[in-house]
Amino acid sequence: MRLLTFLLMLVTLQAAEPAAKSYLSSPRRAYTAPELRDAPDEWIVRSFAWVDDMLRTFPPSLPEPPERRAALIRLDDILHIESAPKKPLVHQFFHEQATRAIEEIEKTKLTSGARIWKIYSHSWVVRTASVTFAYDLVPGPPRNEAFALPMPVVERLVNQIDVLFISHLHTDHASQTVARMLLERGKQVVAPEGLWKNDPYFAARLTYPERSAEKVHEVGKLRYVAYPGHQGKGPLNNNHLVITPEKFVVMQTGDQSSDNGDWSDFDWISKVGFQHRVDVLLPNCWTTDIQRMIRGVNPKLVLTGHENEMAHTVDHREDFTQTYNHLFGSPYPFIVMSWGEGYTIPSSSARR
Image 1 (cartoon, rainbow, N blue to C red):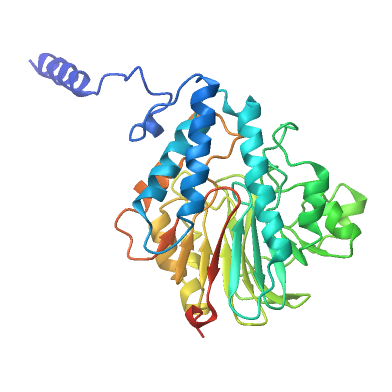
Image 2 (cartoon, rainbow, N blue to C red):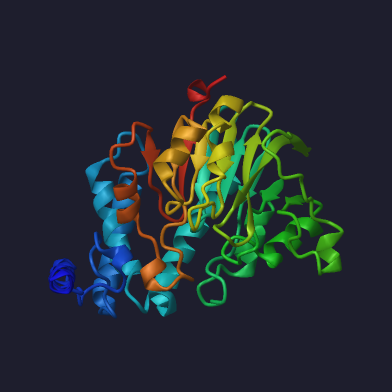
């Protein structure tokens, strides 16, 4: 009788399991529209033209215009075509957006406040009146020369930067080419412990700060904290909190995440907001429990990053749609930005 009861329970449980959904590339994408294998060039060209028009007409702002969100979701559709990383039309769109940002950076002179540009997936440039620094600056998706920005364009961007902060070793965050350009120009590169230490050139020139929630370092005009994060059970991942001479405070998280039940990094994340008055948090959009991270840092504004990393397979190519899902109901102001977009933070909004 007991055996019969067990078998009946087993059959019931199996029947309750959801049927496999043929349109899904991965269960992770259950709540976003499925991607295409391919699409006609005409649809891609017309879609890019509309997206560009909408994003330029409705730039990043609070509150967010509905037209802007619609454009970002259409951009998701294009960038989640399975073959998108190989498409010249996609490369051209990225080059145009990033080059436009670089041209704006070259012309932007600030006397107060700050402006932040999203160059690529989690590559950021921050400028205040006194300094310009960057996070995880790469030319584009690794291992895809056609997608990457041309070197003369990268050089123009590097010429604008005083300090580069690299969160961890993965090549969608750390570029030896970009780091070398900066070092050759006498600029400083702050890197996680051990990055490229087998290369004598970098080992002698990179700055490897102590990973500590309590230690405040100095580099050039900046002060910073290298919060001791991780990417799951994988590499060390510095979360760099940077303080400018104007007391503008920005924190970028690299690939910060927890794995296999080890959430110990939340011990220091939960204290960041008590230690520093953070103006802007730049989190990776897929980090473990992003709303818990935001509460710990307690920033005035959130600008998300790492959407549509084109070196990832399509099932891990996190999209803007999922970012909106993750942040639904958050009491913290947030802005979702695409490649090449910038946002200005007035000095009056900075917290002291």
